[in-house]
Amino acid sequence: MRRRRFDPFEDWFEEISDEIRRMHRMMDRLMSGFEAFLPERTFRGEKDTLSPLVDVIESEKDVKVIADIPGVEKDDIEINIVDDGIEISAEKKEDVEEKKEGYIRRERGYQRFYRYVKLPESLDFEKAEASFRNGVLEITIPKKIEERPKKKIEIKG
Image (tube, rainbow, N blue to C red; front, side, top):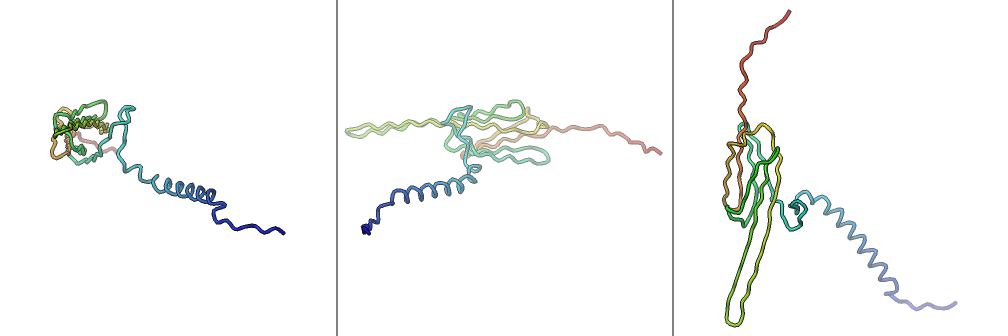
């Protein structure tokens, strides 16, 4: 019988790749639940657009839409009423230039934000108001007040 020499690294590649695949599957399972909490990165098919995080709060008299749009100026935000909701879009442009002896450093940045929020039909969009402070956009839309005429119901029988 022939003796075989012990080699600790003989099957190391297979063992490591199996372990990496197992860890990858575990991480996929772990992270799959967090996707709902991450901002969407879509704008009509464009990949470089962030969807701002939005809270929609409904009360008896109005609906408030609160969106976080950091680093954007008020004049760069556009709010449109479309169909049965509102569109919030914004652009953030940044140009930084640093001049020192021997060099000039220029950096440009661009970011787009877009979010469509579906809202109830019973809102009075004509009276909508919006404010923007410290990167937080707040849109208040009052509900339509429908006064129903008083009607007496007769009891039969």
